[in-house]
Length: 468
Image (cartoon, rainbow, N blue to C red; front, side, top):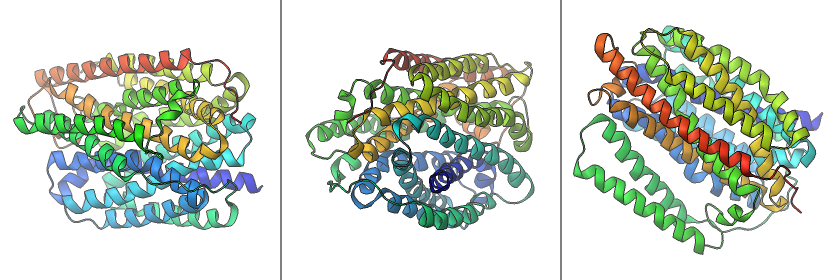
């Protein structure tokens, strides 16, 4: 009973993060209109959140190793709830972005320690099923986010997409204090401030250059940001190789079963995260659907993906991670091919079917891949491994968004892509056709990335021995 309640707490953390992820996308048009902020600024409501999670995930996982994973997990709930309340009270671009960064800090605390808590609650032979339930929490949260997002944005106010996090977060915080206990051995580890700063500024520089290029012609400042970001990412690698306790422990990549799993997570995030944004661009742009109609069209995919999660986890326990993870990535490739076939006259069942396939694919990939990493890592490094896994996936997500938008934006006049993305402009006639072709190019690009992830997943050993 105690373990089941502990799993419920972990699932709740994943659920509210998933709700926040999908619901914010649907609310971007209303946020942009109500606060009167620029189109470029409103995209940083999403990117800024992702950057914080990406940069801090491993460091906060390390704090879990040092001070207790449950303690850091509960702190994550508290920060996330506070950030949500402040986001609901935001009054301009600077405040909504700043408060989203705070919310991202809470999400990073939750994400960096949740995987390690599951690994402490369940023995290696049962972790695949546990991660499957974790994937179920994400899928259910996505369903709730899609439904509530359409209803709230259409009928109430975008501010309520943040207010709804408060009762859920407070309840989870109280329950976590009652049922979760730290079991792992405490280990003192140094924070890698230099690596964290280099990674954050490097990702910021590259992301800023790419998002700016999607909205305006090439300028020398774009090249400066891009070059500076790449240099800082190189500095980050050098720092990590020399630091005794690096932000991203590159030594994990020396473990044969872990290296392809981490890279597969990065490429899967790179190939899949932008899909929701691109599909919404298509549905609200060339097809002229409202936010609530778009959300209802995508709902079946989230429901079926949620149903597949526990089954996929059990399959990973029985067969090992290779087949379920690779099959999930294969399904994602099929979905991206379907999305690439969307035109201004194609049936709306095409994006609906594609979303069903990619959501089921994700449900097969996540628990198997997470289980592979956790089984192969030493017990005392579970928190660090969980953080590195999250960091790899988050880096992929950041560049998925920027890469897809940049590729799609080349097909139409500068700035129009952002206007359609946030729902403040529609398309018809020849421009709609050209724009849809741009989206198709973006989906083809993501297909190639997803294929690479599937190859990496397939080449790892069929059996992942438990560490220690």
